[in-house]
Length: 398
Ligand SMILES: Cc1cc2nc3c(=O)[nH]c(=O)nc-3n(C[C@H](O)[C@H](O)[C@H](O)COP(=O)(O)OP(=O)(O)OC[C@H]3O[C@@H](n4cnc5c(N)ncnc54)[C@H](O)[C@@H]3O)c2cc1C
Image (tube, rainbow, N blue to C red; front, side, top):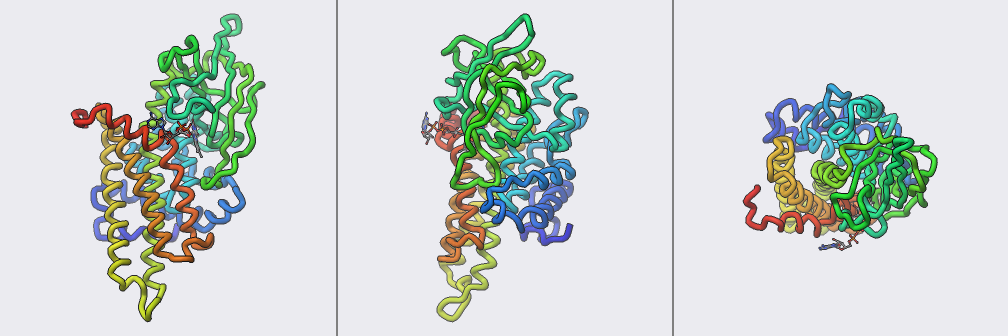
């Protein structure tokens, strides 16, 4: 792979705070993003093309099951490694990186909560990415209040199967994925989080279908659609964990998902910053490059500072998740909110620095603004992140 590493990697000793191995991983993935993703990102966005072939290439680098245990067929890397990987990939395209993030979240859920038989059946194919994973929690009537979900799973003892019915909304990868982790209610209606169970559902199971391909502001290089469950029969062996543990499993997946999506925002923002440095050096107005204007330098300085601040918090949250520290959920929520709000804001400031050219598709900045906007909404909205942090306003857990 031949490409220029990010500016921060060019300093002697690599990026501050990383081990040599971590720095190598980040450089390797950045080179992959520079060579295989960035040159095509605008075209994929315009054509709404889902680059499946690039995901298979990424799997060849060990990115299909990043923090799944090695003995089960994963890469056995840490959440911190994953944060570096998703940031580096997102410099090429936040949408592609985010899709890989959701796939990794679903894969980890099979590893962490599935039986040995389930792991053996799914993880090797998920790691190779010839099987893609999807995460199905949200419903038309249950978004932020996810524990009010209504999809039902009824146990049929004679067949030792569950029968699933309901509608899942906004499912990333719907129709393209081969495996869906579905949260459904096994308890009575109104049983809240304790009545929810998680299942692995195969594409092609009779009764499983998809809604229309949603047209979106950003994230156009990956499909989003409803998942429709109409008496879908799933073997009891496809249950993740015990009955009634599905909401806890879904939330455990989201701790890491929030780190990942925050990292995707950092990568998009890093790309916006690099493009802005280059553009303001080249663009001349009033007889000199606009980079010589102090107001432009201050804007670039603030963008770089905000990016480092968000990155520092995200790395701290990833370390807490790796350590299993009691503050992990709170720190992941703080990091997700900060990285996705600042990431979007940095992309928007980059657009302003590009003037009218930033508004044109070919510069790639308006795509970053569109892609990063949704990171403030999904994996729990940033208002929900504040709810999580506010549970312990004194921060005694962090
Ligand atoms: C492109 C895209 C991809 C997605 N991919 C997936 C996926 O793969 N799997 C999946 O399960 N879901 C997915 N989602 C769903 C996403 O997680 C939800 O959109 C999100 O959780 C918010 O739910 P909602 O859209 O129903 O908004 P609502 O919950 O209706 O929220 C509307 C507004 O009210 C605010 N709000 C709600 N409750 C509170 C509160 N208590 N306090 C303060 N403010 C509140 C919200 O913050 C928001 O601003 C995706 C969404 C999008 C747009």
